[in-house]
Image 1 (cartoon, rainbow, N blue to C red):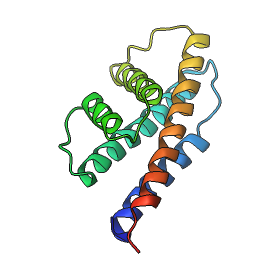
Image 2 (image 1 turned 90 degrees about the horizontal axis):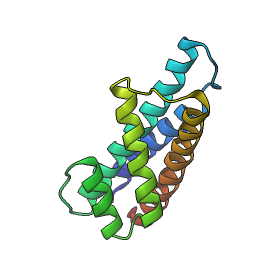
Image 3 (image 1 turned 135 degrees about the vertical axis):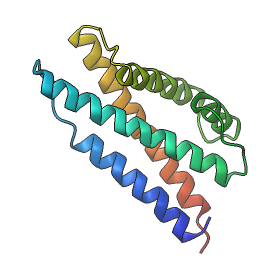
Image 4 (image 1 turned 90 degrees about the vertical axis):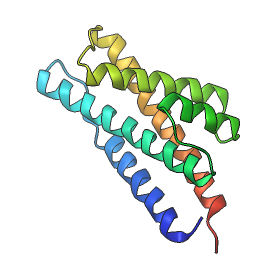
Length: 136
């Protein structure tokens, strides 16, 4: 991987990190709730982008989100547990997009925290892979 491509990864990783760091605290305010959900959505979208980029750089075909995660698992990039957590994060993001987040605040808060933790773990994995692949 050349340095320019690595910079593309770094830009998305930085964007994800900023999104997670700037995520507001949960509250009962509808405006705040929507802001938190947007932060989660945007960070998970970053995972989607990075997954596709990694697969392309590994010479694999880019497919659906879940297929991409499975391919990264097959390549040894992702462990089973992180793959499963990422699939749950995708499902949460899909619920957010469809505005079907109809669960109580405590359960939703736990799901959001898990998604935040999962996205952060994935970002760390990608960062390590990129560092290993950069050609000097």
